[in-house]
Length: 387
Ligand SMILES: Cc1ncc(COP(=O)(O)O)c(C=O)c1O
Image 1 (cartoon, rainbow, N blue to C red):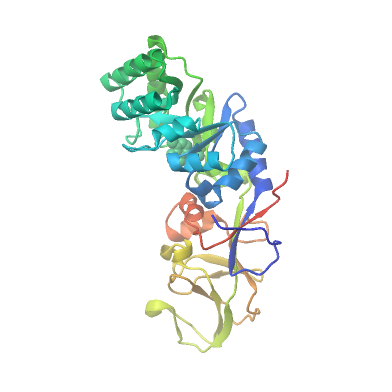
Image 2 (spheres, rainbow, N blue to C red; image 1 turned 30 degrees about the horizontal axis):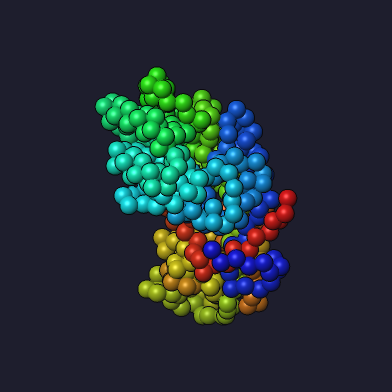
């Protein structure tokens, strides 16, 4: 992730300002939402586009007990960057870096027998036990071991490997399908099945340090799902998991990323002037156009063409026509900001700027995707790095 340590006022084509004080405050707010549980900061996919190492450091400084990533490579990169403590990763494929993970003291997830076989083989080679968390599919229908015979076999074989000193089962865990839909019947059903699957494993002799199923929406709205640990991703970055649940402020959260750019050009055009590829937009009369030097290569959704909002000199403007690879245009309605004037795509909203949620609505997607897709060509500028 490219990083600038320039002062926050230095001119850049575009910048994603990452407010680490907001991130630390979000960690504290989330701890207050789940006071009886440990907190895992989920920093996969470059911390949802915010920068994994910087956000992981800030989250740990603010009291996160665990870090979580999808891939082992992401977790190994955190360790290599010097992050101490517990780091869990859950998305494994055959032939993955099991031995490196064991040697880096990662907690690894196992959803089936192929993975148990590979992790025990790696533990033999490494000459030390792996820290393994068994994942149950309680209804998401994605990763995780099916209940019934599959779970019984996985638990039995994990216990056998534990007795041989090849691993220690540190966790039993699962993941929700619909926690962002309050009252969805699958939430209670998944918690019920999770209790049963954990109960079976514990009866057989598994002694997990942590049992966990809650993501951000469950952390914020389903207290009975907290168990020993909550795994929060999107809420850490100050974004509500879904507008139906509430705004970030409703949960005491503050958006961490502000995406802005310097206008590359401002010019007068006559009425009837086509704008951008395909001339989807034609100026309704004489006007001024502002060129925003960000495009779909930077993660600006092309689906936000003719819809995405941008704040320029205190006014919301809408993308005029198509988002191109590197740039898009806004109709400034005759206003004449200088080239270099700031265009704010989204941020916390304090200055009247749109939010990532506004962009999600404009593009027909979720705010998770809006922030996570901001590309590596946009420098992240970290502010309030020291507590
Ligand atoms: C297994 C797992 N746990 C937790 C999370 C965090 O979810 P959220 O960002 O909704 O908090 C994710 C992200 O999708 C995940 O894949």
